[in-house]
Length: 73
Image (cartoon, rainbow, N blue to C red; front, top):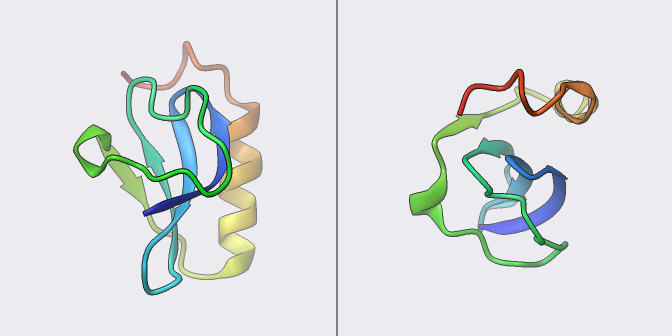
């Protein structure tokens, strides 16, 4: 999986080899990640799979606005 965008230190938007996007959560998973970086799948604690592009954008906006202290660790 390749990082499309780090949403915060614990959330990243990724694209798999088939081109499907998902949002992954894990402790420190987005720390110092940049577009194109590989993501270690063993660090993923939860995965959010949007049904369409509109939902993907909505999740991205939502997760960037939520304080990290509120998200489960």
